[in-house]
Amino acid sequence: MVGNLNHIIDQVVKDKGIDRAVLVEALESAVLSAANKKFRNTRDLEAHFNEEIGEVEVFEFVTVVDEVVDSYKEIDIEEAKEVDPDVEVGDSLGMMLEAGSFSRIAAQTAKQVIIQKVREAEREGIFNEFKDRVGEVVNGIVRRYERGDLIVDLGRAEALLPNREQVPRENYRQSDRVRAYISEVKMSAKGPQIILSRTHPGLLISLFKSEVPEIAEGIVEIKNAVREPGSRAKIAVESHDIDVDPVGACVGMRGSRVQNVVTELRGERIDIIPWTPDPARFACAALAPAEVSRVYIDEDAEAMEVIVPDDQLSLAIGKKGQNVRLAAKLIGWKVDIKSESRAQEEEQEQEETASDVTETAAEEVVEESVVKEETPAENPVAIDEKDVQE
Image (cartoon, rainbow, N blue to C red; front, side, top):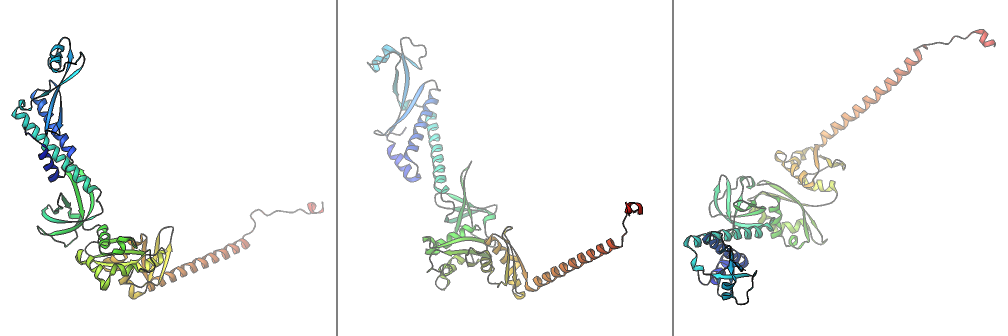
């Protein structure tokens, strides 16, 4: 056993960042475990750390009796008075044991318990540190690949960047620096697990917060953000100051601010859209750069039909439907886009259908009236002259 443990405890606390009380408790538990193993759990023992001398002291507690029945847990009154003259029958007497009496195996057990406690405290400390950091962007160093997943060193802990959270066509090598969004922190059997993401919309929002002071100060607010990672993104911004242009603040001088975000996202195209509470106006802005002719809204179904000029249809839909898909996610409504010619055709078809229905209904009414006039009464009534005279 080591003489003064205060220096060792202080060093471990400094290096591992563990609470001193936790480490002291681990030491007491370890020494008590060793003592119980030495005496085969036959005695009532307690371990306490003495701060003054820097040692863990082990005390054996026995009950003072007139006649001893269990020599491991009882002590004769006469023998007890030699230790404490004021002791009485029924008292519990504590006597300190010599730590040197512990065997080598017991000391090894104490060491293992201490190591286990230190590891548990480290895991708990890491979990407590990162569990409140969900939603933050962190910098790390790539360590290795494991079945497509990326292991990232964050300093005190290693994090996991799963394959599903990686942007297509982004490749990393060992020792590369990577910036990612903390999407989840959970405790597993192997310790705390920190899940990172490069595809989460929160990464886009956090990057803009770090690049645009107006967003960090709350003058400009990001109302929503959607992404198709590695390809295109849209963000809706609103200004709480009439003198501040939200789009201009995010773009920056000569596009410097948004360009920094684009560079971090490896060339992902970003559309910055002014937010408005009017769904129709917001839809027109969200579908930019395409021009919109008309918007029909169904508020109950949260759906809208957008009419665009014929030459703007492909631009509004975007490559493989990307533009309209992102716009619909940004608005939160179902969006159906049609060209002017297609909308006119449907209107004509509806008018013709309505006209046909009207004519058919009129013909049916005429036929029904003619049938009524031509059809004789089914049960004609005969009138007798006698009845008329009467």
